[in-house]
Structures are given as structure tokens and as C-alpha cells.
Image (cartoon, rainbow, N blue to C red; front, side, top):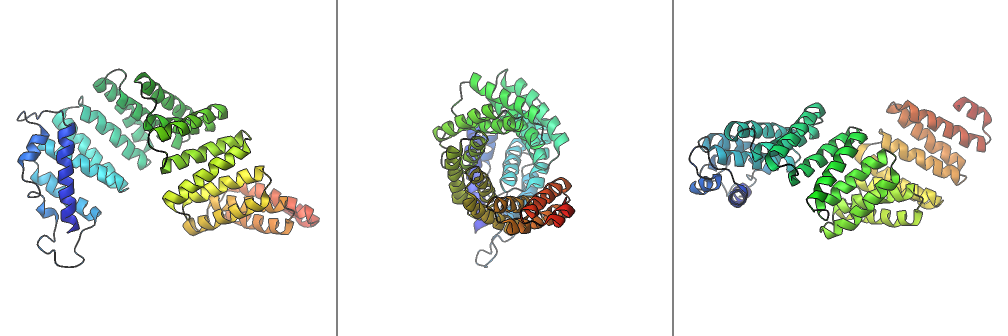
Length: 403
């Protein structure tokens, strides 16, 4: 059965991982968690996690991975109660599986349990406790528990300094993820300072050519752009584009996102031809890794349309916007700000092509959507665009009413 296979793979993986990474001696017997795990017959304690044990011939009885996780937890808590360090290792792996499956609430709750267990068995000055604070901070941020996450990130910074030394490599990752949360909240100044510290630590440790360094550079560029530091953001992103292939990430979704960011910065610098090239690379990446009906592919098309507008290639821009609008409507429906923004851009494109009647039609649809999502500022701007097209259509009375 699939469930039994997952169990086998999970136990095999735990044995290898624990032996490689566990440096903590048991407070009870002096043996390592790895040795204790090997001393226990695998699968025996966890047979109860599979309610269909012995019924392999019955079709449709395989558990999903989510069901397996839920049903394994009681066995881990009960059967390994006398082996606290093995139990802790298992709970850590389960929490990571929850996070990888985007089961955010479950991952957060289990990360809290792991942190409490770590403090009870290993103390609050252990490497595992420092790591646990960082993991829980990320889990809290994923659930938008930002006040709690902020406190946890600060505790994680302090704990990592105490455990790993004055200039630890671990610390750079904590600073980076704290920066991500700050940027997500619109705190670009804080994010800027956190990213700078992360990069500084990596340079001190002489690791400026890794994936982490490139990704932090790219993240930093976002904060810099938000602060209006376009030139600095451009060079940070350009450096990331050069480093990512060296780190083996040239054929990844992350590379596509970095190309997309670089294209936007090149557009801001009026380097239109280069912007087109990088935006096409981004689109190719989004299509390859996510498919042609994905949110990020639609976002890439929207940015391509902005570049085509700068080229005054309005016919190509119209095509890009139509495709982007179609994808967004398919995914989210027509009552959202992104869809309204694309409709408004379509109206502007039609106006510039002299298609004033079509421009008015698209802008009216955009206006209706902006009003529907209660974005009064964008609705007011859209009314002015409608009035402008009406003037060119010589609909002066209607234009006055629009204004």
C-alpha cells in the first residue's frame, strides 16, 4: 500500500538524517537519538497509524499523505513517550511535512509543540531551540500572525547569536526571512536593513556565490525598488541573475521570478529592448514551471504589456492584456482589482490607437469593477480616462457628466 511505502521511506530517511545531523546526547542514557531509533524495530510502533493494515487487497483503501500525517501523530506521542529525543526528531519531520504540504495551521501548531518539547528536554540554549524559534517564526508569519512572528524572529536572532557564535551562517537565513516578512507588511526600510545584514554576514563567511546569497540579493532588490532606489535595486538583481546559474538555479521558477524583476527595473531605466528580452525569459519560465494559465504567467503578460506600451507597440500590448485578463478572470473571477487594472490598461491602449469607442467600453467595465471592490481612488482616475475618450469622440456633454 501507498501508506506502508510512505512509512518505509519516512523511517529510512529519518535514520539517515538523524545519524548525520544529531549531535545532542540523551539527557537520560547518554546515547544518541540515532542509536535509540536504530534500536527500535522500524514500523512496529507505527502499524496503528494505518487503519487498513492487513487489507491491502481492498481497492481504494490507500491513505492520502495528509491522512497519514494526522493518524501518525498519536502514535508518535504515545509509542515514543519514553524516547523523547527520537519523538522530537519525528515531530520535527512531521512539522516540516505539514509546511511542505501548505498545511499552515497544522504546521504552526506542531512547530509550537516541537519548540515546547525542545525547551523541556534540551533547554533554551540548545541549537535545536534556536532553530525551533526560527521555524515557528516562519510558521506564524505564514498565518499572518505578524506581531507574534516579529517577536519570534527577534528571539531567534538572539538565540542564534548565543548558540552559533558572533558571526554565524545560520543568522543570515534568519535575517533574510525576517526581511521577507517585513517587506510583506510594507516595512521596506526595515526589510532593507535586515537584508543588508544578511548579505553582510554571508560576505564575512565568504559565501557570496551560493543560492542563498543570490536569493537574498533578489529579495533586497524588491525592498530597494519600493524605496525608490532603482539603480541600486537594478545592480542587486543583475548580480543575482549572474549568480543563480552558478548555484545551479538557472532552470528554476526562482530564476523566472528574478528575470521578471530585472525586466521591470530595466523598464524603469528605459532600457526597453533588454527589458523585452528578460521579460520573455520570465514568461518562458512561468509557462514551463507553472503552465500558461497561472497567476504569475498572467502577471508576466501584464508587465510585458507595459514594456510594449513603452515601445508604442499598442497592437501587441492589446494582445498581451487580453490574454492576461482572460487568465485572471478564469482564476479569480471578474470582481478583483487586478482584473480591473488590466481592463483599464486595455482602455488606455485602445485610446492611444484612436479606438475611442472601444476605449470607453473597456474603461466603463474597469470603472464598474473598481466600484464593486470599493477602490474609489482608482474609480476616480478611470472616470477621467472615460471623459478623455469621450472628448475625442466629441461627446462633450457626456464627458462633463463623467468629470
